[in-house]
Length: 210
Image (tube, rainbow, N blue to C red; front, side, top):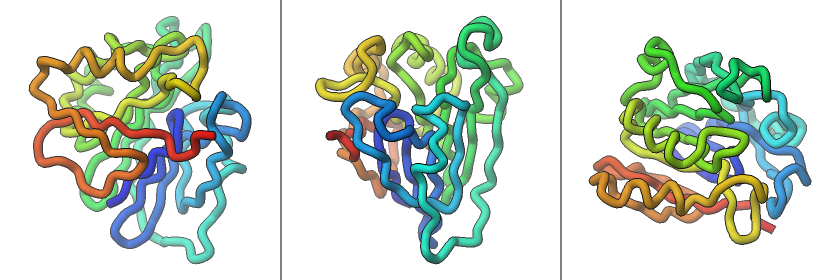
């Protein structure tokens, strides 16, 4: 298993057989400070239709496609707390890689129902937006982590010194909320190849920063 954080809400997760799944590829120029994704994958999942999450054309098919199954489940949610009136729908996606359960929250902006929570509770890796404005904010994301109880949390959709939308918050706002949580803080750069044994917040840096 290998996780590469391309930037914004885009990751590439590769299994031990070489199969790759990409999440929420962004269109070149759509996210300030990030270069084109320039990635390849066997499967592509997009949480919704906005250009910073739905650029299929930025993902190339590999020369030798992998023929496996990532066991993908889409869970219908909303991009806002008004049942999509403001920003439309959003898909939360659960998928499996090498026996590990991943959950990508997309641009979630609403609470989860009990049924939806049951589908993702206790996952191995939770990729969750933390920047607010367009999505849930850092405090709402922290509360959602409490409900989902993942093994590892990877914050996404945040602003850094040289990248990200001006309207959204910084990752540090999310980090501070875990100071007394008992979760280990792990700085992983842009690539992670091994999950920690204990519960953790994994801090990843965009690979495609300009």
